[in-house]
Length: 288
Image 1 (cartoon, rainbow, N blue to C red):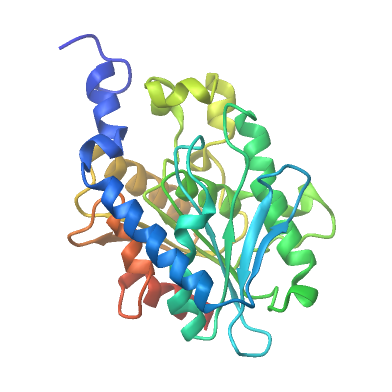
Image 2: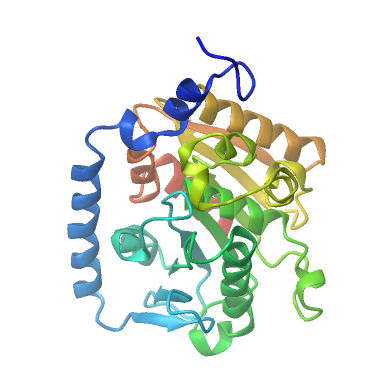
């Protein structure tokens, strides 16, 4: 074994912990299935507002699906891809169960590294939530009942939304802009990523990585939080989830961990996709 680069991991072992595509060889088939289901979702909801701009960047856009219900709550989802891959289109299928339950669904995209740096990327996602809150009346949902979730890099960004000091960003924004959250399979401490090839596009130094790690920020929104991951994920994702939840708990925030039986880093989102799924049922309960 080579010298450790982080905790007790050498460089190869640490990369293997975070190389989710390497751990789940079927990920391409899973992604193709999501894309097919998402095409069907968009086709079934021609009234959805697709590619709404929340900023000037071409990727500063979101899709909004509204149920047939007045002033519904909003669930906003942030896609993954290690801050450098993917887009929102493959995740539209998640809207189906929410719409059937009378809940609006926003599917958020954001600029990617290395085209932008990580602080800029985070700022775009914060702008997306500020835009949703400020324009909720025109968009057609209840801004007092906004919920955030996201998987992988989106899980990290969900953690950032839950720890953002919203009034410090703009005085019109409330402290509790998001009322609840479900970060899924997130990376809440970015330091280990800096020691893997995944981190090359992010170009983080130690100080910036820590500043953008929700592990080290208080849960300023006071939001109820379910920290989720697949039971089949590796040691590092379980450690990250447990330590992040412990940090929230230490600040008195309502938080619990949901380890989804039989799920890996990709299939865990299926628990959010249908009634009876642990994460969907948690989301609906927190929005009630």
